[in-house]
View (cartoon, rainbow, N blue to C red):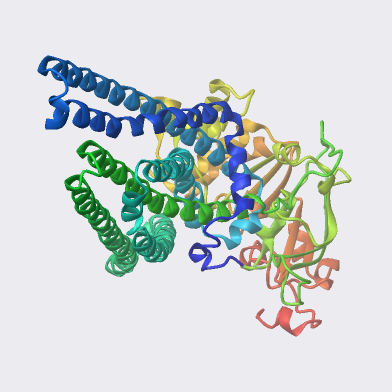
Length: 628
């Protein structure tokens, strides 16, 4: 089962193993990163030049002692040249930082693109059991919010942190070189800044954990309630749903309020300490100037260098939070990417080039439990064996929970059986290529799913070899010709998300047309006519006669019109195959069919199909207790 507190896990502030794995995503763009890092060697000297220019201007051209040594014209020209050099430095610094930021932002977006593509591709390879135990909202958070956290690291974190560390080291060395006494005065507040940063880091770390948890819960809630909006409105649950969402939304707001409070306290505190250091420099430096031990230009330059020294400390505190969030996000992303795709192709997987259409279940046992040996209560299917000949239609009936839909999921290899085997044309499906296996099947579900796009794209599903004419022909044969003709855009008519603009019956018919257009060798109908009226069902019956011709079909249904024409009826009850045979065989009294006893899983409609009711066999109390 999934961990409900997974979003709250933070892990280490820095994990070298995760960082090495993250840096692999930069390899395709390593030369761009090298260029961005190379620009650091240009940006740092340009940051150091302006204070030096102020020192020269003050000491050589502006202060009274300096102007007495040179003429006014020379001072004027000197200040003019220094101003031009200062302007040129600003322009070059702007261009260097622009190129550096532009490169890393582009690299960040490309790594996000690569990572999201990899995550989505991996999600498509995971077995259905993974989606059974992981909510969609959480998976959406992986592809969106968590990847965004990594973008902040790649685009604004790595290079900027290197810039800041280098600038701190160079600036500290320069301060000590210029005047070690003033440098010690400037660095005196550094322990206080580090202490404030420590508390800020812990506070924001907790706030970020709450923010990530709140976002994941909001995503899960929205996905669930928007998907079930019809049920919410049907049972007048809008007010309750609004209260539930308000609760999660408030958690998100309060989490951000904590983060805002932390930032609102931290930056003014660091600014205050920085200004305090400048004030201390001003006092000590002013006394030194009065004593003749220091020049005004050196003091001004020193104060500007000190300001530049404290700025990276503020940036590093913010970058630490980016690093913390990136480590937590990467841990969850890599946990998803490391999730094994248990349903995989065997070595040397086979293909069915021209399948005959034979299906065989041979002593199949199956449980949805994925850890440990299933208990007796866990088995959904128990020792199921049956054979469907090529071109034969088999109907599957039984009460809810009898295992009917599970049979279909196993046949399509969404899950693997724990015991026994499923064979197509005598070949175990575990030895077949998955895509080749599924391309031979056409399936129509009780709840049809339509994608955003057009009617044509929903019929074709991007399958090569199916043209627009094929899609139109399939729609016409299934009885949708009148509907398509009434639409101004025909098969190019837009389909909204999940086909919300079409009725359930129309969506069902489009699903039938989809199966018909793909011309499968095997056909699966899972309560496919349950959502259509009698008139539409007659149209579908006519199309099904053509669709079923020459194909092997498994039909899960309770309507007599669908079941009674099946060559074989498979009756399931509590995971076991209790009866199998033709319609009349199962109902005929005084025959072997009656001797086998008629399971209560067989629908009442079949029992009333013009034949005498079956006699009680008296073999199983739990089997016959519900029959009159």
